[in-house]
Image: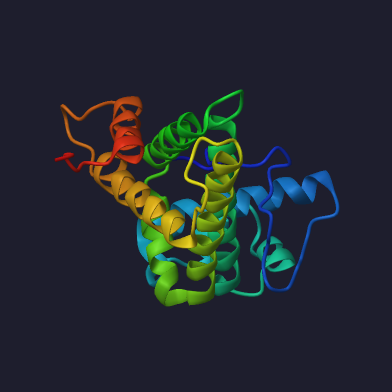
Length: 217
């Protein structure tokens, strides 16, 4: 993956930057920040947090070291911003995938396919999010909590339409998210020759959601 490849919101910036709140005020500044975040994606994705360096990020971004400190106070700060950026990118990919007039089940199938396709193109997301558990636990927890909240919102919308059970709970959202995360790990990150395409994987998971696996007696 090269810099600039990460899916993002239309304005090209993460919903949350860093703890210091250093937001760019010009178009040039926004482009520089985007270059830094994209370069950080590659640097952290290839080298891991502890081996990655600020100089490596600025070198990949093609910007001066001083430009880094215009937006971030430290390597930890840009890592936190990157986790937020990636979480936002996953959200954006899912929203794009579920656009249109879909049933509740179709929404979940499309969202999973969108995630699988995103993860296949941006394999570094798993390494970076997993490292966040130890580098910045708050960012790690926030990523999964906000993802589960979005899923629960979708389940409640489906229930309101009479297409899902009337009492979706937080546990249902976390169970569904867990399934999606591990499907992404197996098929998007550890993909093998002969694997089903993402739409068929999503369809199989969707069938489980719709029908379960128990046999009526």
